[in-house]
Image 1 (tube, rainbow, N blue to C red):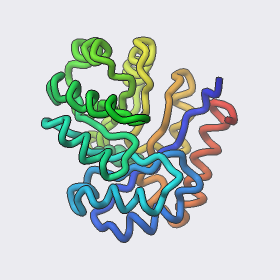
Image 2 (image 1 turned 120 degrees about the horizontal axis):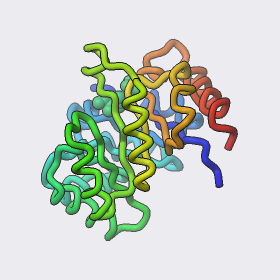
Image 3 (image 1 turned 180 degrees about the vertical axis):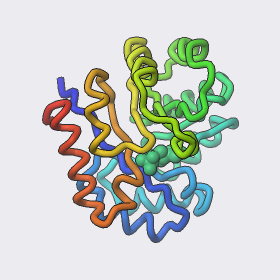
Image 4 (image 1 turned 90 degrees about the horizontal axis):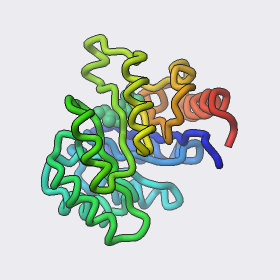
Length: 221
Ligand code: 5RP
């Protein structure tokens, strides 16, 4: 079984042309392309369709971070061409259930629960398990990063606990090649990187460096 984590590019832009240009440049070097929440807010659901169109052979994730109206927002994302969409962890269990139901009606679609801001993981994670959630995004939030939150052993323990519960855990939030060895002891499914790719002078070299760091730590695919 291949256990090398995948790499996802997060397109956190507010202008669609810039996002399209970056997707075209880097898609070959990543496994999944994410339409970031700011881009969806700025350019609408059409941004998902646009990235789908220019990256026809990539999995596309719409980072909706849906807080309510789970069925409608999941349908919007999937109808626009997303393979994966996210629901925010603070949404009610019914919102997660509604989004999951839409994914199940279609083939090959996934709902991920996005852990931004989650405060009661121990209580809520078993509920997600019970209703059939398979995939989580473990997020060290941008704003928390700005205010000094770093990747710590406590966070690593939380990630390990979720994996031991049977979830596929994707990790994000200021991921750089230098931080990848920190995650060596946890079999994460995928790393998401935004700024460490698109905000660098050479995004292709940066994506390759991330892939290389992942392979060095977890083995080559
Ligand atoms: C912010 C996000 C970002 O997409 C995620 O944090 C990845 O971006 P970066 O690698 O720049 O932190 O969801 O809420």
